[in-house]
Length: 485
Ligand code: ADP
Ligand code: MG
Image 1: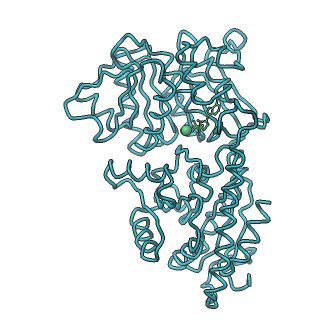
Image 2: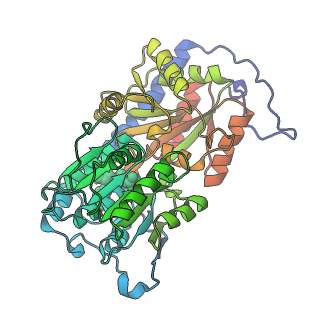
């Protein structure tokens, strides 16, 4: 059977150049349906296993702590701006130790958090210390970075002062919305006022006097330039997914401009950058963006892929990818999944094709109108929509429990170059397997080039990406089963 595959995954031959694959023998539809059903069952089984883990072990335990299991093996690197480690730095083991406003503590416990996560216990004492110091924090996805900076923002606010005092920017409105949700939950008992600065959400000509502003860089910059936000009381300026915000594509310029406005109006403002990944180049830019910052790094970024079984399917060509995709989804309606593509037109074409074959899928990309994007995300979050076809617009940060399958329909590439984008890959597959759950990711290759790109990813992370055949879903099921155990 395997010989009927197109075979990118076979050991490279000496000349390693790609030649047209042999024709596939036609698939028996009955056999295929049965096999797809088994695959669907597998995914259902995965979701059931996952929700079983949600059951509280003891009555007081929050329903789902939502946190990536911490093996305690991280190598934490803390480097302090002024080098005086002994005086400044003590990690905390409880939220009480942070000396927080009781209403804030109430909010934290109300969210079901019992104790700080690893990144929180290391970062919070540094973030909250006075005089405020800049911070660059890195830890794998799902480790609770949001709560770390949301808590920092809340704890810096003077609730009697009706003026912006904290600003947080994220690369996409969906992520900003999620941060806002965290903020309103955590700040529930403090009376904090908030503004959501994303496209079309603040009426024209309306001044922003909320205490915390969460949004995207373009909208904030626009508000600043129209003098709609008073920046002089801003004490903390946060970038989430900071490496993405600083990676030189539009966002960087807007973030930098916004930060410069803030720092000019409020020179002692604390700058905080958080992300799961920082490459060397971004790191040096980050060091200039947030000068003299304390830095915390939970190494082992590869941990984020440990709970995720990675597969690839070697398709014959672009068209065959669509066929294989439909075959996978033939009966797969359980659990939730995200299909990542590299281009908007591909997302739309796939959506049309899958819908025409009777699948319920939704496509989301940057050209959708803002309200439309919010509605699509709400539907996906609530489970009303099960399959989301999207571009990198939501590759990062989005925290949805039920996603147990991520498909890289296109291998993520760096801009328009043929180089694979390791970080985006990590972020994309990090949408599944959150909270220590098991997730599955499947990469589609369709020629020697895409196969090589994927192999580079596999080598980069030192993780095997297992080949599954495209013509035998029994085999697919078997391989998945063995991998998941
Ligand atoms: P990151 O930004 O690092 O990828 P998130 O901030 O999205 O991670 O957090 C992942 C999940 O962990 C969320 O569901 C969040 O509610 C949960 N979480 C965060 N901190 C804690 C904590 N101290 N205890 C329990 N759950 C937490
Ligand atoms: Mg995050």
